[in-house]
Image (tube, rainbow, N blue to C red):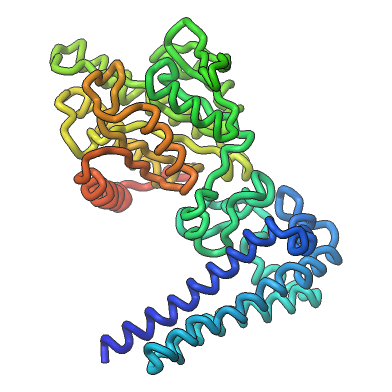
Length: 409
């Protein structure tokens, strides 16, 4: 009996996930097909940047021209899991009707909105409600900030309506188009590679470096000068004005004293690897003030796989693990997306015996970010892929249970 119920639930939930995938694929097709886009564009015409709309007639037309055909296509494709169940497991065919009932709810609410029901518009159009955003863009589920980006960031990305699965698979869960991305440690091997691949992805890149020389990239055998800002550890506050104009900050600088264990080495390792990165993160997070900031701004922190594995450099490990825990703690109530870069040994001045190339690592980082990976793991060590998610989950739960957010005074 228990196995019967479990399989029935799987068929029911599977049929719901299926119709959501159909909806998202229809949405993608609506941006490709000129015929469908002529109807879909009504949906994009309706809303202002704060998700209000001035013309109720246009809103109702968008329901009939875009949402209704979308619901009818979803309803038609609910027959697929029903037919599959009839062929292979007919005893569960009733469970596949969950997708049909689920779609019927959207169809009825769409007709109500198109008929001018103000109650239906306020109650059922959840991803288009005006007002302050309460959290950053969702990870696995679409919320208002996530969908806002489809309307006002890049309409050739962020296609999903409820679950973000298709965007993750397609690499459309994050768009770099037109975004200003600043990278610390930009004079280093990985920093330069990140700047290159982010630029090729459509970003406007900015180099933050402690070196006096400007950063220059080579693209198609042609030099490309990158806007370069020189700063020093301990002077993070001087970057505050610049960070207001940055959409994505990649905190990538660090130091490796290798086998040293002097008091100076301890101080330097924690100052550069931990506290400088933490101060920069906090300054950047303080610039997130509007709905648009919450939807678009991100901070990526290179904490290294030293969080869970030895790096054969004790002070590097200790300082990076401390940074990793501070980032995990800050994530609990961060006002924007915070990503961790969990990187294995790549060849650089900090690690001349690294086995991965920085270019390949940077390419993987950018590709995984497009798939909205919040913990970007790039390594040759399979244990990291197993250990880090477990460690991150339990540390986050521990911090959540035994700390509390800042209280309003």
